[in-house]
Image 1 (cartoon, rainbow, N blue to C red):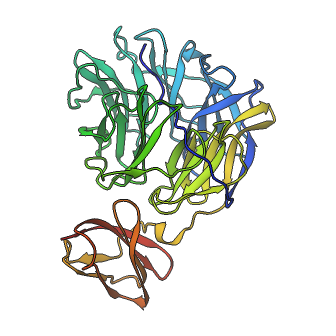
Image 2: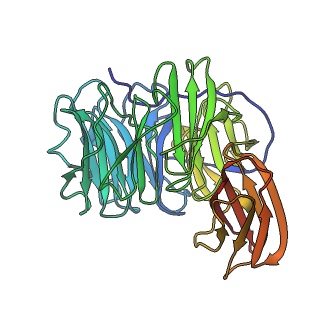
Image 3: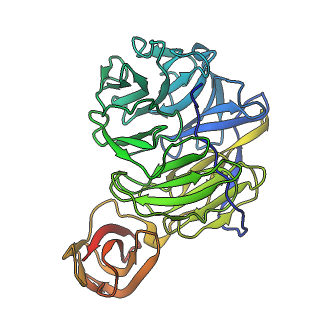
Length: 444
């Protein structure tokens, strides 16, 4: 039987405290409902699908949503998906969402479901597809209210990839690079950012679109399988280009972890460095557009949460040592992590209570600085017409800060990279307001 979820990761434990979480109630009358996937629309609207935490093999079709920032969560179920495991949710607003479903045991039994009334009723979509006995539905993602993609395993030598531009009314097959013999995808660990979406496979490959599903590229990742018995990987992205892969080698009970970084959407990766992320098995999420990573763990041997301000180089544990699983962030002040409910009014999900406004990690949404010459042999000059430069940081591909300089709010600043080894560096320039732009610079 094909694996349906990415393998968990087990890491070592440390202890300090910083930010915090506020417990919220998912509203389920059944106990031990865990959170499989969270999709944040905005600071008010969030959807989540669940699983049976007391028996993860017992497939349920439950979801929950909030339209008031989590003060009230409204649970529901998708009877049309009876007998299926829900794979993920892609939400448009408080009323409209898409959910994928698949059977663990019956090939060809899975598909896509849509609601436009907040989950009161659901309809099946894309029903003419994913009906082969070899079909296996993996994931749905909508880039906006009209454009979305679905992905399933290969049938007749091609991935079952489909795209809609009319909110799911009609679907068109999309051609991706051909799979390897025996290759298939997973229904977990398929990240998205901006107009980009990635899906991962059992052959260690990454398939990426940057044009909202019209075309796909295929990249080799530094892992042999994203959810194998003796190898696995957790892939996540900050934006269309900056991402990380945490690779597991060895069994889940006796693993070795290495962090790999990409600055071109997964096309190339750095040499990797041993992971120092704390806690037990867990999930990772970038604060979008930053170098800040949050990790949450529901592992009873090492529960809790931690963050890294420097793209995974160093970590700080925060909050209480409580079980937290799936994690997602909208920005530096808005995020949720999954828990397990005790009853209808107690627990199930946590809302972030704090702020990751962390100086060098904030990336300006509008380009302010230029860097020249790039590539450089030594002196790099940063210039801006609409901002003042106060601090510059240079970070190598292992996430280590190798150079920094401070300035008195100038429009042009120079730094000397002559003593740095040849290679690719990330240069962060902070303006007087604290906003930062991150640039990729090549040192000859």
